[in-house]
Length: 113
Ligand SMILES: [Zn+2]
Image (tube, rainbow, N blue to C red; front, top):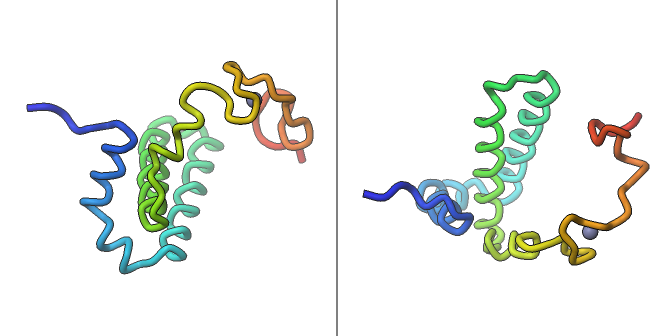
């Protein structure tokens, strides 16, 4: 017996089998709201340093992102492919693009306000 297929394509297929019918009934707009809510929960877990919640929140965000991609007829593996080898903008790895200075804190943490 083999374990679950944890490739991006395998994950999208599994999430479709589990949730697509319900996701279709809910629709793209309401599903997007759920996705956004999960992103907010991830932000809160990171900000509060809730280590024990982080893995769960990352999983939730990934699952809702996959649901959204399926509702929009987007192949998540194809969407990820441009990032698999190098930076899609500069084609280098590590990325050699100029770092954003306006929205990124010096430590790469929360945006400077
Ligand atoms: Zn780059």
